[in-house]
Length: 482
Image (cartoon, one colour):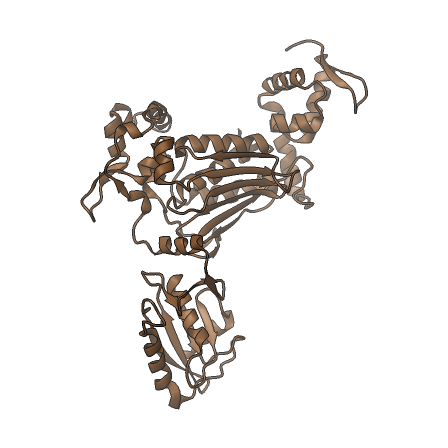
């Protein structure tokens, strides 16, 4: 590194892989804490002789050799470091002053300094004491995919073979002449890479991907006891929840259960793409739920979560990250976390090529809410998609004029799509709840408040409905069926 490159580093300041340290006769203790945290995260560079604000103070040239020697001696001391991290040092001349760069690559093992484990979070070296966080660090250090772990004593009887006809039908919808249609059950499992050999040990058998995709509930609970997906609605009862679904069955059924739960609690609106009406809500749910099922780390004790709140949809799942921070569409480089499971979902039409999920979230979040999603990767992958509820705002933020126009287009399409079916649904709802409100009807039908209100007035004019009593205490009566 030369002075010009160092100047650019100083301008950017400290971050997850850059740290500035004052250095006198020898490095201070916090320098070794940073070496430990860089080793445990993604690696990084420490610049000795630079103050926190980027001011270059420099190192006494007479002490340079002593500083470098001290670094090597401390790192190699087994009483201080449980495993000696690898480092390289480089001297840089900058504006007549000497700076020593200490480069620390990410190491294959979790390292502790003075019996304390440090991890790098943003520009901070954080002490790690939680067993769950330590487990996540060990997962990050693995050089293989956990889904490939082989369980040689598993048999076909341990799997939900009753799901395979459904799997074949789903595959045929996407690919009419899909090869799985002609395979028996065992051939299908082999074709999907759910049965194979661990070439490190020579063991043959079904792998963790097979267990999570098609295992029966008992096998899943024994092999992955912490596995579950927790879906929560928290809009009115903020202390507990309005509705909740805990799913711990196989991924195929879990995907359907969590998706249906989300659709029940989120407003729908249609978007015209050419002459075709599509549902941004359904596409967003598909991508968020698919990510929860496909790209999570199943050996982690951290449960996957889907939370629907007043601001929008939040999801969290344990990840095996190679990047820490917010993901931008322009610089996003997708990496498969579970390639066998991802391939299986692509075969049955519940996922597309790698990276398409993020593009779809950005594409459809705007017409759905008027805002972009927020995605953060790390040991826990977090996604947030805003929701514009029936009142027309997200946490008090009014949509832009273009979004209002788009909403009008959506409402027009809503009126044209399945109008008769919607009227019948409303009649069925009134039979069960004669005093149903416009807001309750909008939620049940998956439409906006204004659409539900117009539907009531339209059906009154058609002579299908009649209101008995006051607006507050009255009830609806059906005058004639459809």
